[in-house]
Image (tube, one colour):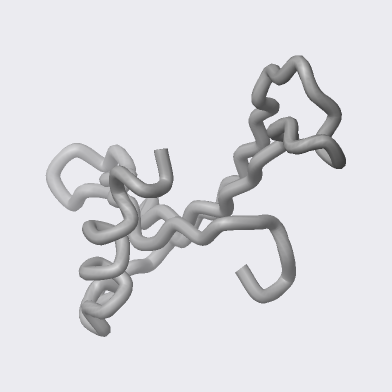
Length: 80
């Protein structure tokens, strides 16, 4: 999945104005596990992680969150 959206995410990350108007920021971590016949140390694929940041600022007309993706970072850490 990552390789199919990496260029788009990089272009979004390079846009300094993407946080303009954000009043509520949401963060979500996703972990998924690849099924493999081999252990990770033998070339099998193990768990993968992403941290996403989303603009949850309410729409002024409807009051509903916009849920606009601002950034998606591989891994889970304080730096993400």
